Amino acid sequence: MRKIPEVLLKSIYSQHKEVSLKIKTRPLRCAYLVRSRDDLLNAITLYTHTWGGAANVILPAPKNEEEINESRLLLSEVNPDYFFIPREYSEAEKAKLTGELSILCRPISHVNIEKYAGEEEKLHLKGGILSHVNQFLTSQHQNLKGRISTCLIEENDRFKLEMALHIGCPSEQYRSYLLNHLDSKSITCSDEDSGLLKALLSAIQYYNPYLLTLYKITKTYSENRDRENPHESPLPHHPASGSAQGGSSESFRNQNPLGF
Image (cartoon, rainbow, N blue to C red; front, side):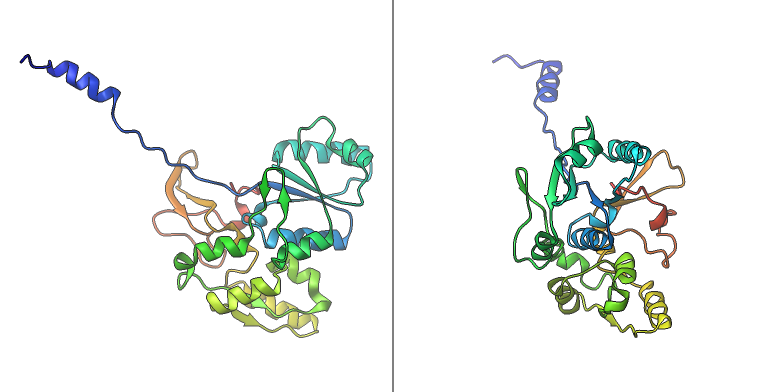
């Protein structure tokens, strides 16, 4: 029986060697058009309950041609997977804003967002649904428990917008998950301006509901900014925590606004 030449064996092996692919998912990249304080709170509420939400864009409604052109330029740079627009926005206004950009627009209302945030209804998109942060964090519970310190600020209607801009607008279900499963610290906030300042300063030491939406989507970088550090950071390094071990990290506020 003739032996197969070694060179041929190597050739056969090289043509049939095993190839492994590492596939990673990313959150949807979104933009939200706002025209009022209520729209802004709706956008923050939606993003607070969406994986990757804190990295998404909130776009003020343009009031003139110059602002329309600037908004269109921003949309083309962001290239969102979905552009959420209040249902009251007319088709003509929407077309004027998006122009020839190929963007999937999704009309949305306060009721849609409240039911989504409270997990009463799913938020349907073309070809699927928007993933809820509670479901995602629940799947990562073992990685989070005991590794991070989280906090909530007790609700206060007087400072609703101010608190939303800092820690998001978590639903009762989201609050319950953080309190019962991640042992979140609950911070009180009085009706005085000084009470708000004290609560926000106390919250700086912790990860908040808004920041938690960025879990598993950010990376640390080495001193050489042209080369990405292969080690993933499960969460953006907290501004109060300094640099990460094994290299310096960009502060959260200086990261790519898209976070991807």
